[in-house]
Image: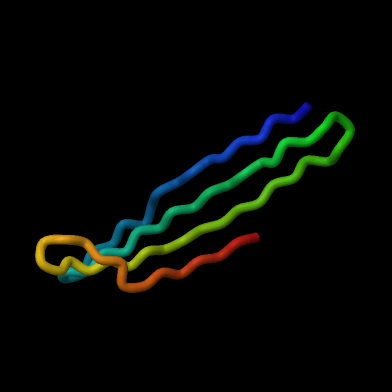
Length: 66
């Protein structure tokens, strides 16, 4: 039996003025029985935030998946 697992990565923190972008990616391996081929996928989301009244607000996001 091949066990499932997820690996998260947080990167790409960029700032400009009161804006910030941060990228979160994940790579997931699905559980498989012996003899089955491995299965995996990856996905990522970039969040764009703005500081408003001393709080961070998501103003946009961009996502992908394979």
